[in-house]
Length: 242
Image (cartoon, rainbow, N blue to C red):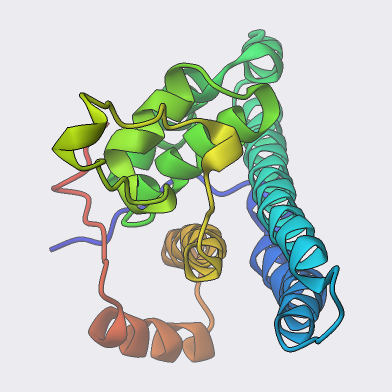
C-alpha cells in the first residue's frame, strides 16, 4: 500500500509546534489552576468554620465555570490553529482563487470541507476527529449557552450532568430537570482527552508531511520505516483518493 501524500507547503512547517503549544497550555496552565481550586474545595470540606459549607458550594460552582472557560479556550486555540493552517495552504496552493477568503469566513462544517479540498483527504478520516467534533459543540455551548450544540452534548456526553433521582410516588408526578449548560460539569479527564485529540491531529498531519517530502534524507527514511510499524493510523493513497 502506498502512503497517502499531499503537496507540502509552508503551512505544514508553521504548524510544527501546534501540538506543543496546546500540551503546554494543559500542563502548565489548565491543570495547575484546576488543582488549586480542587484543593480549596477539599480544604473547605474539612473546615470547622460555620460558613465553610457555603463557601465550599460556591467554590464548586467556580470549579465548574473554570473548566468551561478552559474548554472554550482549548477549542478557540484549536480552531485558530486549524484556520491559520488552512489559510496558509490556500495561499500557497490556490493563490488568487479566493480560497483564503473562504477559509476566513468558514464555519466548522465549511472548514472540514475546505480541508478535503486543500489537502486531498477528509478531516473526518483522522482518528481524532470524533473528539474534535465534540469539542466544537462544547465550544459553542460554552460560548453561547443552551442551544443546538448543548442539546447534542446531552446525547454524546450524558455523564456531564447530574444523575436525576425521581421522587417517591406520594410526591406526585415529576420530570427530570432540563439539562442546561449551567448544570454541566466536564470531567478533567475529558479535558485532557480533548487536548490529546488536538495533539494527535497535528502529529498525524506531521506524519503525512514527512511522507510527502520528495527527496528524503536517509535519516528520515529510517524514521518513517519505524513510524509505519509503530503508528496506529497510516493513511494510504488507495483509501483516500480525492
